Length: 430
Image 1 (cartoon, rainbow, N blue to C red):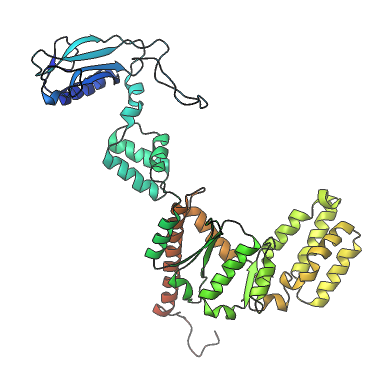
Image 2: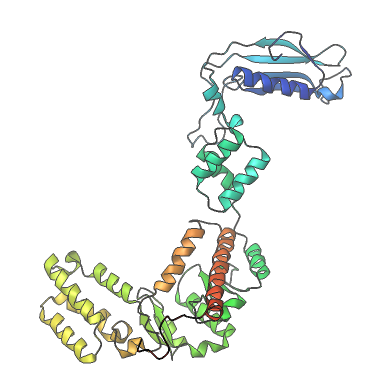
């Protein structure tokens, strides 16, 4: 039924397409529309049935038809299905004299390349998914499902050889843009407050975001505000803190602020939060010591480096001024001049911000690291893709915010829903 025969008639263009499709599947070949003349063009002088759409059609094998002509500046490495020795296979259709049908007039069914079921199944046209399958794939990919598992699922459902590149391209079609207006509209839909910072030339410099739930604490780890800054300079950082203060009248009750020593604008925090205890994460303190106290930078051996780091660690965990001073003298008496000079210049004058004395612990609820913040940061990385567009970033950010709020509320409610049960008698020693 689907063999090529000269004089074979088709009553519509749809019938021609169906014939070509079935012929391709039967012979493991793929054709493209090489040439055509529409009946609406000036070339057609006689009446032709409208269902035919064309007075002339020529299909050629995708490996032939005409030589490949690259476009553009020819900078990119391009590839084509066209063979150097073009495949001669083609099928030509002409409308009959009465204009009632399209008729096969000429054809060449001899191909100069291999034709197998496997190679045919990997052609892009054969891998193409239906609209329903595409929507299913997009939904699964939006949930961060593993592409290999999505590919396997689609292959089982459709029977097509879907490759990972197809899923990557499909995922790219769902990527959103960097429209600041759309981001603000999205934030407002979430009943959140958004404040934008722009320079004199109307260039975006920062975005402050705060949801109503962020202002409502429940004795749990809370995100109280989020700020995106293009550059973390003094001016932008000061705008962030002042914006936070203007929208939260209880800022004055802030007792303790923990930062990383690498934060260049810690003096801004001191000035804008004068009554808060400013401290440094102990984990980052030790990390900086290990990074800066090296054999190359300090001109010491590995054994001496190890000794210095041990003393510095003891300084971090010293509880009294007396213990701290004794350890400082021990570090100085080692004779490692560069090490002590570095310590004296960068750390000694701010000892209350990193040594675990009473002043450090004031208002910190005995927290010595920012592990809670790092935990949130790891959750952000699980949901937010690297190099996301601004719109994708904001939407993913609110997924995390909502998830954290639900878990926080559950823990708060759980305290009232259940009570601790003891197996001991009320009057027992236990």
